[in-house]
Structure formats: structure tokens, C-alpha cells
Length: 278
Image (cartoon, rainbow, N blue to C red):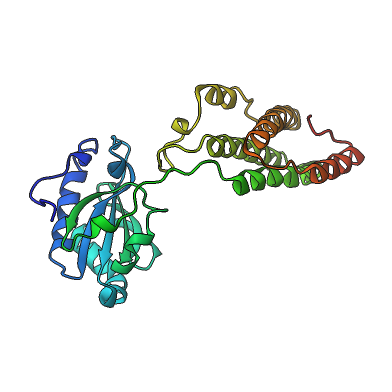
């Protein structure tokens, strides 16, 4: 069993307000025999915690006790800390914001499911282990680019371009502004997916998922304001870069280019008086 009297080094990068929160959580879980193991995951599990990280805990609960434990999550959370907001995401799992704005996320699972959790919790540090469950945790795996995800992003951007005339029909330049931002977001996601494998990172690790060249590319894109000239210039720039990068990424990852979709959207836009960048 992990030594619960000593805080693990993985906590070292967190702000000080997280340390008593960690202590309280471990004390509550250690006092509950239904809880058989607790791990740090997220940034702490990767050994990459910093002042912007959350406290992420995963908990293994005896199978026969899991439903009752999960149903009581608000009770045992209240024993750990008062909160400003706490929202469930799955049975016995939630994210919350404490009264001093620390962020605590807990994921609960049945003991029997521990060997199946490697795809979502790839790197962990055991801090309580009554039954040697840490030995059942799968070794970390860093998968490569997902061709299905890459294909979906490319198709979705092309599909959404068929909506572009709506911006002009309704003279809704705010809609155009958001539409351009959506292309930029998909460009980011496409680049990040193409860079796999990489160590698992949370949603607030943004620039770290890109190469230096990709960061410069996205940073240089013009940001639209809600007026026709601005959204059109920003759309042309975003789509020019997106299509160029997407074709290269599709080729590198063996993803078939959706030629029929692209041609159909181009023809429609041309008939409506719009151009889709090459």
C-alpha cells in the first residue's frame, strides 16, 4: 500500500491550496473500506503538474459496493471539501470547484474494470492501493494519428462551407465570425491529431500539442470581426491554410481525400457567387 503519510512528489507543481484538498480526499477515501485504490491521474499522473493544473483522482470501488458509493457522491464530496459547483459526469464521477477555486475531478470505477481503464487514464500514480490493483493498470499507450478523426474533421469543414451563403442571406456577420473561428478550431484539432503519438495532455494544454511551425501558422491567421470584409478575408485565409494542411496530413496518414464532397461544395458555392480557396 502506498504511504499516505507522505504526499507524493507528483503534487509538487500544484498551488499550495491543493495540498490540504488532497489530504482531505485521501483521508475520506482511506476511511471508506469500499474504496480499494486511489490514483492521481491527469497532469499529476504524468509528472507534469504546474500552477495551472487540476487535482485529478481516480478511485476503484468494490464491485458490490459501487452503485451505493456512486449514488452517495455528493455526501463523500461534502466530507472532502465545500464546493461552489459540482457536476456529475458519470456514476460516482464529477468535476467541481471548491470555495477557494481549486478544481477537483474524481473518476470512480469498479475494481473489475480497472484493467479496462488504460485508454482513458493512461498515466497514473497510486496513492492508496489495498489489494495490489495498481499491477492491473495497463501500461501507458500513446496511439498514433486516428485516421477516422482526421477524415471526419476534413469532411466537417467542407460540409460547413456549404452553409456560408447563409451568412450573406441573413447578413449575420456575427455568424460569419463564428464560422471562421470554427474553421480555425478544426485546423488546430487536425494538426494536434496529426502530431500523435504524444503524451496525454488535458484540454488546457493547448500550444504544447502543436509544433513550433504550426503554432506560428495558427497565430498568423487573421481574426475576424463581425463585418463582411473582415469575415470574408479571414475565411479565405483560414480555408487556404486548412485545405493546404489537410491535404498534406491526409496524404501522410493514408486518409482518402473526399474529392466528391469537395467538388460538390465548390460547385454549389460557385453557383451562389462564392469561391472556396484552393
